[in-house]
Length: 75
Image 1 (cartoon, rainbow, N blue to C red):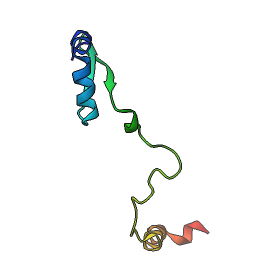
Image 2 (spheres, rainbow, N blue to C red; image 1 turned 60 degrees about the vertical axis):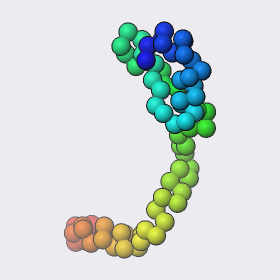
Image 3 (cartoon, rainbow, N blue to C red; image 1 turned 180 degrees about the vertical axis):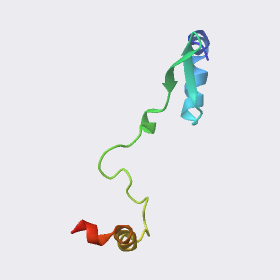
């Protein structure tokens, strides 16, 4: 939506953003701003993938990775 449209119906678009809709404001056809709820910021840093790899067999992955290399050339 254009800046004019956003200004005219700002509360409507804030409500849509709070409901999870993607709300992007344009200026002369170019995306310039995205409205997102404050709690929707992406988590970054230590622990960001916590729980994502539950049940993953790291020992098996390590052995498969190691076996993919020619061990004679590593020494």
